[in-house]
Image 1 (spheres, rainbow, N blue to C red):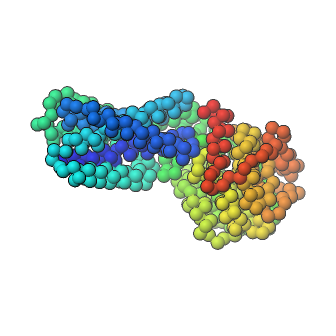
Image 2 (image 1 turned 180 degrees about the vertical axis):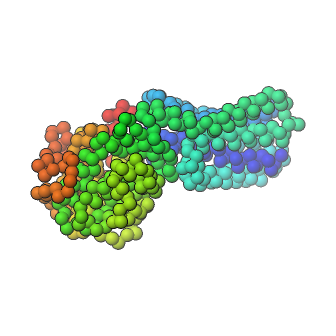
Image 3 (image 1 turned 90 degrees about the horizontal axis):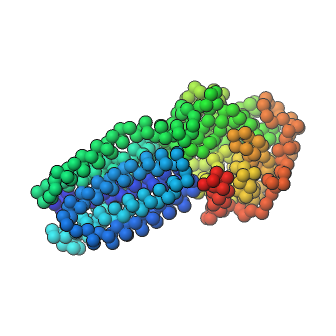
Length: 500
């Protein structure tokens, strides 16, 4: 009995941690601010496990039978949790948090029952000191195994819904294995056997149809035809079509619409680059869709463009898909372009290159991994890679809907020693959107825009740098790496706008 139960400890520990990671990752994908989501999910989960451990003393009768039933219940709830939460969010985001923490609490209580029950089952065969050492050793090894596999293999290749169903199946299979091994010591075999078959059958069916389920749920979320959807190790990438309009979503956040992306990218690139007729070397940070590169390639004097984007699937997708290549004018195939798939901050730390113009086209600072790219530390590091006469442009969310967030980015650049020139433009899909030009010298608008544009013209430029009263500058503290106040401000402001 000892060895099979210890193997069970390894498996159930893996499953228990997996449900915790899946809940935290799902909350981060859908709600943003990964530190807050993971912290609260882990806290509630550990608290619930403590409740389960305390309740285990009240579990009586045939402990093997109780252990099997708990495994089936954990497998059923944990296995279906990600799919249920995702569907709930697509239908109505209001009760999502309540359901999330309710499920985390319930699953945590059941997981907290497992190890104490196994120790009670084994106590007659193993000395107490060996029992504690062996059970906890297998418990921690199982936790290590899933903590490594989850980010490297499971989440990017199976996705959260299938991963949850897989671990649910493992819990249910542990129950079936225990039922077969200890059939001589367990009564009510027929009932337990039927329960095992039902749970395993349901979870296996769910695993088989998980892809269709996610597609259906996402179709309900976007209300558009989904033409491409995949999970990379870094994000959920979804491309939708409505009539002749393509839209890109990353982690369910709109990144562009083909209807008006030209406004966003022209405003991002041309006010800065047109003011630098001597620019030869350009760096693009983020912008894996190639749209900013497309605008930069309009300038014949630019000799080299380096694109640094974390996610290789983004740059591969926008370099290979015919419909997306048409949007970026095959910019990612240009001989002038070098693509580097790396974390921007780490790449800058290792590089010694200097550029005339830098485009920081990162997603909004909705979590701390993105917030670091809007910090004083990052902007000081970036300064080492910009020529004395060079300039940086930063996309910086909406000065209308997230006014404090926008001016926090301005204050952060200035705290890092940059001279700033804030401006904004109307992009229909986003509303008023904010940008910031930064350099060692004051910015002077170019007299001409020497390339073909649909939106930006010399006459229109002065208006971009004027802020009406409801977007005018307000006091804001810089975003520093050790506290990342920008993430909290951004979440509060956009949460109010979106009603979350």
